[in-house]
Length: 371
Ligand code: AMP
Image 1 (spheres, protein in one colour):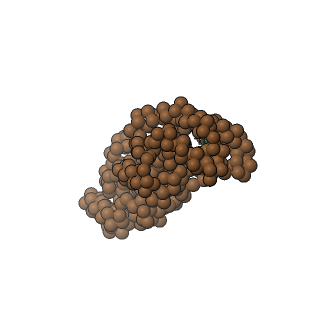
Image 2 (cartoon, rainbow, N blue to C red):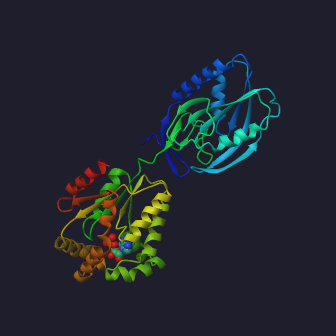
Image 3 (tube, protein in one colour):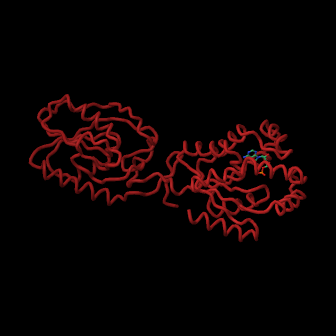
């Protein structure tokens, strides 16, 4: 974990080592030298990303050559915008020259199209394309790529000239977006099943941010906020708070923690609409629910636990058996169907919620460690 770097709101992990990059460049320089060492080719670097590559390439290419740059831009954030702007045009004097484009990365091929277009109006002798990184899986194949440093899968990369919203260009090696290390868990279970207690242990153990929608509502009630006033009447009766309110609140809580290595959602989602909203919201942030783990226990045991908790917690919804039973009814009617929703995604796990606290943490950890 300590090798992760953070650029803006995202974490990146080491991906391609400097030595490997330099070895690939060395090999490429040799290949190009085989073809061009008896001429004086014009190397045209594509800015901004290729500056570091061009620099190391030229150190490896010790034969007569000229160097120039064009500047194009197509990325914004993590995705290619599809609009390629020409910010710095081709060199003027190119007649009869052998031009070799040096690109940092070729992915869809949109930038290449623009480059070919730029050079098609010139009277160069020859026009070749070399790229340090090549995403063959997504390349549209419109033009031949003549020289390739390293073929890579279609992952978002930064470093060695490449950026994420302008950061990361000066990194000596290449990093990849760290998506897999994020764990987002949904703790599922009836009131009193031990979700809050277990989340308290799991968040320490796995370095996760715990979001309990019940806790957020209670905090707002205590502080007399508008949200608290709105939620109170529902909570007091043991009814669910309306989806729109709860979903917006949950999103806010996630947004407040851009640095989290993952989340434990405790008490959310509780309805089909919430589950769908959560999936859509996480997807928009390149995140996902990794697992839903249900803590199972019988109603009678839960009622006893909650009444016991009500004596010290002061929670009005824990002190009255009819309110507790109403919360179970809400659960059975609105929340229990989510089991099928997550089963369909292959993400539903069930754990026996009866036993010692440590024992139950152990059962949950076993599921998490197997993800
Ligand atoms: P909890 O602490 O999770 O038992 O939640 C206490 C109460 O807060 C519930 O009985 C609901 O009234 C309300 N609440 C908590 N989470 C949600 C949710 N996801 N959707 C609707 N209401 C919720």
